[in-house]
Length: 147
Image (tube, rainbow, N blue to C red; front, side):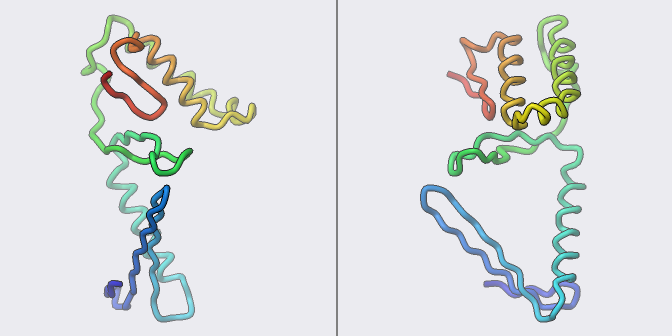
């Protein structure tokens, strides 16, 4: 347990980690008072600060090996211009068109009851096929690795 002073108030922070077939982590914040407004405001400020810090960053997600169906961020990187990626002539425009069609069809996927992850996997398969990575690279819905 840790005790912090935040905006002149004492806040108790407790972290619990349970490791079984999956990893479960819980962080509890406590303070003296009857209203939770202080902690709610503090957590919202933390969320906003992180979102601002990562707003221009590229997040790469992979399937969580500890909890099926969840995704975890593998890394956070800088965005780079599409023109800096070396591809065959016309391929970048084709991939960009595929992705734009995918994003325009989000509502359609929802109407059909297709979860976002399944739709993304379909798009990943199209990208893999267009790049002809089937022999040399394995590109799955969440990871890319050399054979």
